[in-house]
Image (cartoon, rainbow, N blue to C red):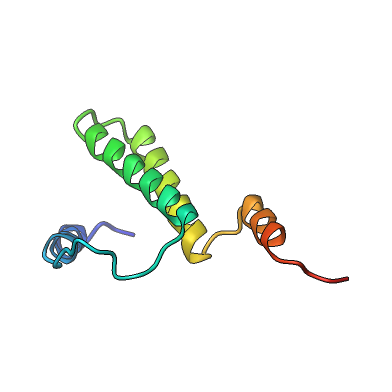
Length: 95
């Protein structure tokens, strides 16, 4: 909240992301919906990185939020209305 330690946090996140081994094959099975959401999240994050050069923080925050929303739709940490529609469209739930 005070900003103390942010540089150390940024450094730790950077190390965690860039020093992990990358494989050609995914480690988990994903469906086409996940692929679409992951591609969209990646695009939003790339846009946010490009905008870092312009210091347009409102637009950066919008792209980061969009990426988080897409990831949340995969992990279940968001309850967008379309998630409920997706669940009910794929499963027969009796009365």
